Image (tube, rainbow, N blue to C red):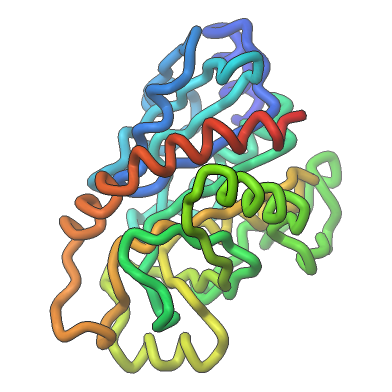
Length: 269
């Protein structure tokens, strides 16, 4: 099915992207910055799961950022929507087949580390997979990657250093931390957040990790960026609402767009 999806995309645009971006909840504005763009709804791509989460546009956008050809997934699929690990990571597989060798995953996340603030950006240095599944389970396709891929640097150290340099240039505050992936869709309990902090997590969300595993399996270099859209349960004396996630995403939209526009050409060089 990935080959069918690849052929459909190649029939719609002459551009062959080398850099891919996945935009999380409320963070879809970057796709509008591309020139010579082609928008393809996920529903038109064979095998590509639709995006049902609020704040996810559900389309693949291929265009140019300066001279760099970029593929942008405006919205992603999640396990909590009822999709399988293979479906959740289908887009990454297809982009890898198209020739993408660098991936930037963005997401909305809850802040666990008490030094973080709502609206802050966090470079993912590592992850903890608590979703109970791995997308590589089952027979291995040796044409895609090895049976036992190394994950000791799942998020490229070189890319993180480049991202930090860009943040300094643009005067964008940015930190670094460990992302914990939970199944969802319910938000975590205060006890679960205390547990996550104990085992070393700084932010928590419901995406990204399975995609990062598949990207590493295919030899694609990964950068992960979390937007702290809310503080996790029990940290502030208030309940958590998805509207708050989308509202914070909108507030940091311009900062994230400016950051990615400067960063991506350096990853694709």
